[in-house]
Amino acid sequence: MVGPERDKHWMHLAIEQAHKGIMTCSPNPPVGAVIVKEEKLLGVGWHQQAGRPHAEREAIANALDHYTPEDLKGATIYVTLEPCSTQGRTPPCTAGIVDAGITRVVYGSTDPNLLHAGAAEKILQAANIQVSTDVCKDECDRLIRAFSKVQQTSMPWVILKSAISLDGSTTRPPGEGQWLSSPESREIVHQLRNQVDAIITGGNTARIDNPSLTLRSKKVISKNQPWRMVITQGKKTDLPTDLKLFNDSHADRTLVQENGDITSALKNLADRGCNSVLVEAGGGLMAAFLEQQLADELVIFYAPLITGGVDIGFGNCTPKVELVEQQYTKIGNDVMLRAVVKRHKKTSDPQTVSP
Image (cartoon, rainbow, N blue to C red; front, side):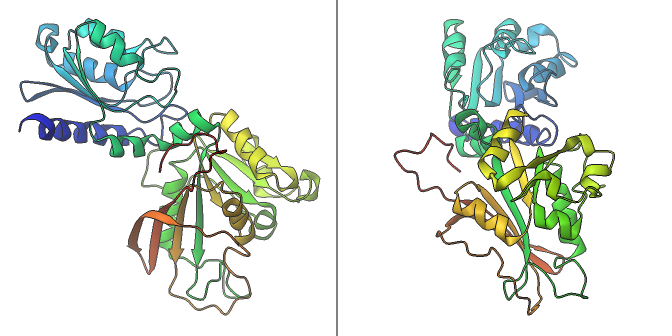
């Protein structure tokens, strides 16, 4: 391999590393790194948790477990995100790269924080390190789009989740049971919960279903319980005091947003370090997210049922919603659609990250 194809090959390996941190690194972004010299892989790393070493320093440490400092001199490091250049909870990665004697840095995404964007390139070039940018940019940008949205808009990435029958109902008639979707689909939902920082439901759903909204998948690593937010049209005092959300061992992770104020709810969660949220609610609240253009992604489970129910899915959702990046997957007896909401940017809109 030579040139661009070689760079893409090693960047894809860095992307694989970054995926390992999706469930645990928030509020930081998932980042992966690999170190290569003369087509030989020397070290790999990924950012595991906020406050722990970044991917670049993990890769350098991993390489030094097997090779000498002299072996790293003249190597290339591939990183999914522009290396940090400022002192935070951990030292700047640009300094670690310079100290290691690495002579080429290749990264995919530019830092979405406009105050830091491009700073690493200037620092590294000043140290006579060659820099190549935008390698596998689209894939690397997708990795951090929740983090990017918060950085640029102070609002988290919002995923709407719902199960719908073939006749457009989100509920089953009384006496037929609670679930539309298959057990396999419900397991996917639990895995989704592990990938977000908060779970939102509506006041009506809280009253009717009394959900726990906890992490219960046995197929993923454990993490801290996400925040749970109830958005209600009335006051917190209107909600039943015996709800599981108010009485289980994670009650301190339950929040209530009164008066149906979705924007304030999302800003509250972003202020608490939430990059991404999952909405598990009825059609009315789902429609409100779409109408207010506050949804970024949809995960819909189509169940092979005709319920004859009276509800109408996403309710009276009036705007046209165009979906891109559609993925259809057979899950048990269901078909899962996962897609991104296409943004029609207005001149007055704040800057947002492209889906």
